[in-house]
Length: 333
Image (tube, rainbow, N blue to C red):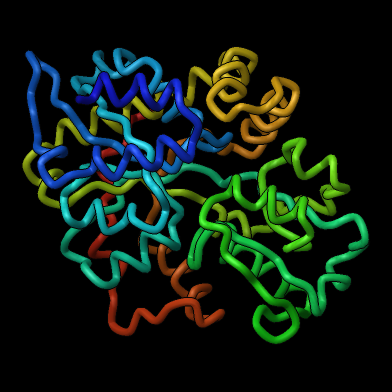
């Protein structure tokens, strides 16, 4: 089923690929398998975006992981269902925003483990043409993919740093995915959102433009990271496979840094955007260190949790993030 699914992901749009995931993520689909000396790992990601090009490369060419002893079974999954699918064992590994993962993990802390981090993402604030400053967003609406997502927490923090509070001064709406934000911005349903530059044509053609970058803001840089998480049972049973998966993601990320032009071609095709836009997005990701793999520590998790609680996005009570973090499996470099 894996090869058929990957061919479909390559030939269909993101929305269709997400729909296919519902079938691919049946309870039996993530059973651990070994083919020869390779361990199959069901690895999910949120779709073709600049920050997820390592996963797109792996989906296009699973053999890249053979030197590391794993055969990735790549799946596109929706942000809303991703954490639950991981906890239930319907998938074995996942790349997701730190906030979204921690919210889900706090409900079932024994089910999943963070084994690595990527980023930060080079998020910039894009606004409607009549917005000339962050202050102009007062009494307007901003957008994010989902509650607790990386850009949700980050835009709340950015607004807070500039004296605005979501829910009081600024409304927020959730689009379901990052790509859906473009249409909302183009239609005028939202007047601001965070995304990696440059903004795709559908929004730019309607006057949406980049107001500012969040790069260099230490608080936001910590919030703008994604995590690689695995199902705890799979980790316990297959620690070497998890190490191999991390090494493969790292190798794919290094390919992007070594040949950004080729990576842009991959992104342009997968995301159905212009090559010029893809080139700009890849360059921004590399400059920000988005493709650098590093430990996502308990301290990193605590910072995200504090932000989520500060903005009343979620409550964590006695949840201890140190129990869901493993920093010992990362590749040496």
